[in-house]
Length: 398
Image 1 (spheres, one colour):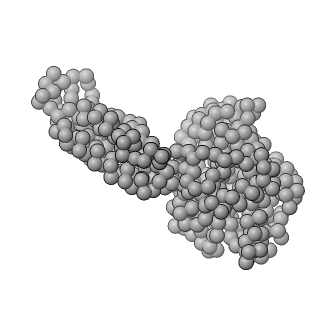
Image 2 (image 1 turned 120 degrees about the vertical axis):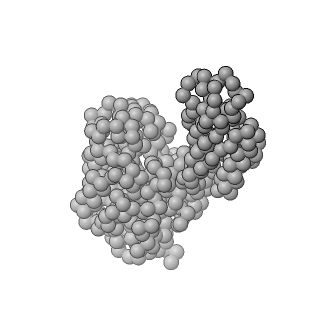
Image 3 (image 1 turned 90 degrees about the horizontal axis):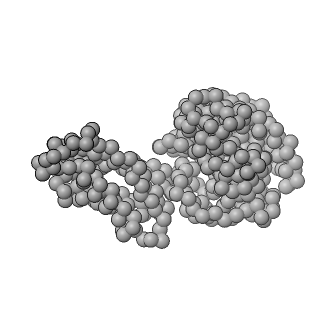
């Protein structure tokens, strides 16, 4: 089976590259992926895979029914680009001004279509059903995963396991990074409006200076992480924006702060919200002001199932050898794949796309982001082989 998978992945590789480049040229932002969805639907139709459209607004689901009914596997790829002006220098660079597939979602889609191409040729070896989830809006809160789930992505038929992958130039092409348990952080946005009493900059005693209060709040909030949290529990609170005032000699009435909170623990995440509210409110009160606080809940912690992660790593070893698999540390980036894992078992891994020779050295979200396209063949083959192996083991157990 491994030889068949590898042979087929080489055969379809030119088609995968062609599709990836076409998608790269025409990126669309969150919940605007109409043309992208049309392109994917057409590709799936060519290989006889049934398609359900407008799932989660612009998403779609392809369904492949195999030779038996040992279970249902979902494979997910995200579809949206970023509001980034591309500076990669690629011949097939974005033609949509100010938009770019700077996070590699074009590669994710191409690899998933590639896996569908392989599995459609090996349908008799697929002991169950495969659902190919092409999801919109991974880049923008509240994310496309909840919309897909609401529209039945994990039901009819009910999904038993979900797998997903993400490109990274931090690993060389041919390497895959795995980790059971928490692997990506929750991501919440915190908005604080500090309210004071404005006046002349030469008469601060007649005002309640929200600029000074805001500075105190910024400083005090860091103690939430450094002094109120278990130091063994990763977490980040970054104040990324401060806005207030119009002139050097005018004390404004208010100052606005914006922050991101990242955690690896849902219990601590909830507690951190409480401490941020308390710290900001009491600090403002201590200096005669007040504040309004809004916390926008983003993606939850992404927690990989241990059993499915071990299975995926074992499958990769069978396909590409033990040196292809590496254990990676958790990262403080966020992913709405976490919502699927709150519902069913599964795992999410990193696929290496880095290569100096291919100019693939910039990080994701960079305007200069490139990938080593040989990784597309590796990713498509692995998705296909893992699907067959999971269903084979499930059938044997039943």
